[in-house]
Length: 277
Image (cartoon, rainbow, N blue to C red; front, top):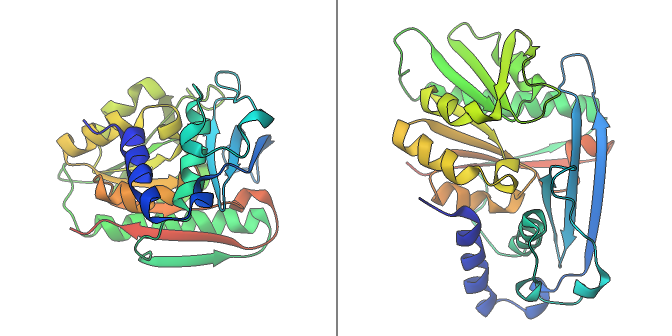
């Protein structure tokens, strides 16, 4: 089974031999928590994220009450490889920042969204949904009648669009207790402990990049591979890992580097990467 975070760290170490040292120098850290519901179709977000800056910026979301990263001036100015930490989100954010300076293949598609965060939330959901529907047209359902799509890390706007498709059966899972056991647009949200079962049963799983921070992505990748489930990741956490994710077997990655669509007015970039088949 792939250890995703270890693999990413190994790649960064290897790339560091051919890049300027300042690409890997930690220069800043930001910690943000928020609660937000943009409209009645949206999920209510209770989330926290950590931004790390080298030359570029990287992000990791985290569970606020479980893994609050400690911000310390003592680690600024050090190479990210020299920072000793037990914080997984900090490790992810630092690597993501470094990967922003590592040249990779250009995305298959690139979008720039403008307007309010309300408008951008709808546009983002449309981009993801259109790409998912296009991918499903390239495969046959495991079941005879409908495609089953699992959403791991619930996003109400995406479910709202996909539920209008008669040939889809939707399932969802999340660890956030504010949505577990509830129905969003008629789709029941199961506890995150059911994620691997839902991924195995699905034709395609749409998975949040935060699964890397919660240390569940490795098992999701393994399960999807064994069950022949197509996998799509929407990534604010680890947005710059998209190329590597595709190399690891992810079929589609929606990469959204900071500033995020939720941040407010202004331009947001979404890059779409696809695995070569």
